[in-house]
Picture 1: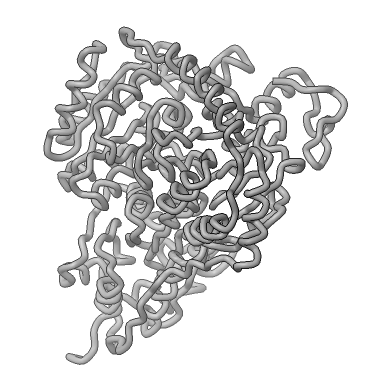
Picture 2: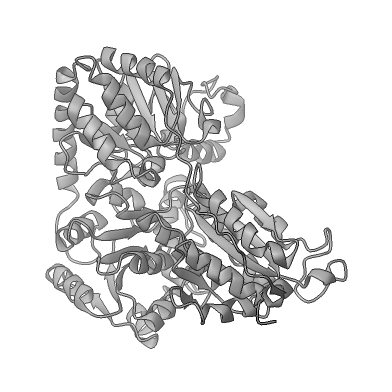
Length: 598
C-alpha cells in the first residue's frame, strides 16, 4: 500500500507537474477524495466557490488574462450540470479550461443510482456537455486518470483553445493506483504558415490601396499583439478588431480604428466597408461584430479580397470567401507577412489613412456629444470615460454583456488580455464572477467589473466567494432597475414592457438596496449620488484590501452611436409588420421582394 497513491492524489500531483496552480470548485461526495488530495499539494490553491457557475466563469477569465489554464472540479449531478452555461462562454470565446466532474460509481451504471441521469442513456451526465466543450472524455479505469488528464490538458490548449470535460466515476478518486512514472510536458501546438501561401498573401497586400488588418480573439490567445502592431506600423496599415480582439493594438495607436459591429465604432465600420483587402487574423466573423454579415454594413467580399488567417481551418470560407487561406497561429502569420513584405515597398496607404482620419474626426465629435457630465441617472458614456481616467493603463476591465458595446466605444484598451468580454455566448452574470479569476491570475493589477444590476442578481454567489478569499477587485454596478438593454428593443419594436423592468405584481418599482446586500457579505460598498463623487469613490474602492462594490444609477435609455446593423431588429420589426422575413431573403442572404425594414 505504501507504494501506491489514491487516484485523487495522483491527479493532484499531475496537475502540479503541469504547472496548474489554481483549482476552482465545489465539494460533494462525487469529488471529495480529489479535493482532499489538494490539501497535500502545496503548489495548488483550491478556491471554493458558492456556486459552480462562479467556478467556470472564474477559470475562463483566469485563462483569458494570463494564457494559463486553471482547473474546475465539481461533484456529480447538479454540481456538474450547473457548469453548462459557463462552458458555453468558454467554448465560444476560445478559453482553455479543464473541468473535472465527479460521476456515479463505476459499477453502478444501469441501476439508476443517486443523481444519475439514466432515463434515456445509462450514466448520461457527460452527454450534456458535448455541444459545450471541445472534448468530453470519460475515464474508464482508475489507472487511466493521469494519462487522460494529460490528454484533456493537451486538447484544451492545442489548436483553437477551449474547455475540455473529464468525467470521472467517484470511486476512481479513492482507488489505490501506482504513481505514474513518466510525465509528458504539455505544449500547445501553434502551426506556422507555409511560405508559398505567405508570399501570395504579401503580394495582395502590397498591391492594395485600402488594406485593413482585422483582429479577433484568436490574435489574443496567440499573444500576437506585438507582431500585429509591428506589421501595421511598418507598412502603415490600419487595424480594426472584434469585441474580443480589443487590446491586440492599443486604442491610442494612430493606426487603431476601433471595433466593428452593430454598435461598434463608426470609423472601424467605415474601414471594413471601404477596404479593398482585409487580412483577418484569428476571427470567425461573429454575427454582431460583422453586422449580421450584411455587405452594405460590413465587408463586401467580393469585390474586396480576403486573406483569412486562422488556427482552425474549419473557419475558412464559412462566412466569407477567402482569396488566400493561411492555416496558422496569428502571431506566426503576422511575423511571416512582415518578413515577406520587406521584399517590396509595401502598400501605398497615404490616401487611405487620410480618409480614415476624416472619419475619425467626425466620430470624435459624436462621442463628445454624448459624454457630458450630468446628475444621476448617469450616461454610461460619461461613466466609462471617467473610469478610464481613474485606472492605470494595465488595469483589467471585465465588461458586462449589456454594456459591452458602450465599452467598445468609450473605454480605451491599451494592453492585450486586459479586457474580458463575453462576445460569443454572452451570458448575463459571467461578468460578476470573471473578476475573481482575473484577480488571481494577475495579483497586484487593478481589476474592475462593470456590471448591470440584473447581472449581479444572476450570479450573486460571486460576492461571498470573493469576500471569503479577500480578492482585490471592484464591481461597478450600473443600477437601471431592470434589463435595460433588452427593454430598449421592447420599446423600439413593441412599445410596451414585460419582464424587463424590476417591478412587483402591482407594477411598482422594486427598490433593491445593493449597498446593503454587498455589505451583508462583508463587502465594502457605497453609492455614488453626484458626478463629483464618482472618481473619489472608485479610487477609494481600488485602494481597499479585498473586494468592493460601487453602485451608480444610470439612465435606462442610454444614447447609442449605432453605425452597424443587426438582423434581429429586422426580424422583430418584420414580425410586428406581418412580413415574412424568410420569404423576402434568399438563401444566400440577398434581399428579395419586400425591401428592408427595421
